[in-house]
Image (cartoon, rainbow, N blue to C red; front, side, top):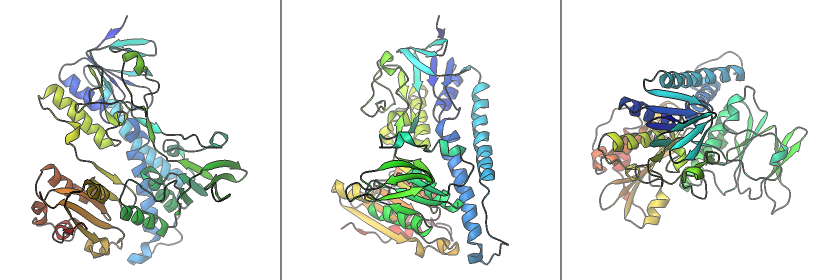
Length: 459
């Protein structure tokens, strides 16, 4: 006999626990299911542990640069990778335990640890338990994509998840994939002391970004000694006695790079393959994502999909925003919509990239009249004070409405500075609101009005 609940939440990533908390607060008897690590990707293998590693890598980088600031450190700078991992585990573990304790002590919530599979549109089996509810929320996230690459089945390789178990320094880390995950690990491990080579199929890294952003990011990494190999159109791997070889280009004859370890960072796929979605009649697209409407509802009434699994955002902040949209529609008589949110994300290399709205390429493709303002970080006092002048600011504005269309801030504090622009975009206010604001000196954000005061037509 099925155990009856009012609602079932599958997955404990960023939106699942928050939905459960709001449901139980409203008196809804709820079950939440997690088959592996409570807290999902962000807490266990994503944002929190990787940015903790980034912090350790930056500490090593700054220690090596101490003399540039007039600071003397006795002896060479060394990195204890076991201690680095232990610190990462401690920070990540605190978050994991925090979420676990929150859920397990939440009144009105029952926690099931096991694999969930649909047996119908209202029933979910977890191991030997059959659960039934009128409302079901799917928050199962995504995992690393493993490509059908020649030779891959014959070697050991790492993903962003298995990298979390590494407590040693790879002699030469090969990274296949020149996008956000791959580049963050590239700089991180180069700063720890590894040789690092990034192998990218395309003609530039971060192909979704504008070419000037891609070029600047590549330059930042190469300045630190990261090797970048582009146009690797025929990638294959081969086991060697001293590690692994990656073939780069079949068209022009054998070319390869040999390393000690291989990290795959070529994308993510949704965890929908083993949920029994067909038993519930839940549709998926050709990539396995669950299509949803503006309120995150699937094609089956009473079933919602939130977070990475719906293909409407691949970030912790989009997943949490999914929760806010679902809760607003269910309980607050507030018709919030996914389509109302503005794209925003960061690349957490050092210096970081903050991105909001449209790229320059997208603005040009739209055909609208636009204005653009740019400034190199060499003109930013805060960046010069810190001897970190790599990068630039770029802001795009609609020439007719004077609304901000998008921005890229690649430089010191770029991941934080960009929010001042994002907030004006959400307010649907003209760019002059921030352009005329008085900001604190000396900061990076104080130069945003300066950039906007020097807009020119996008030619």
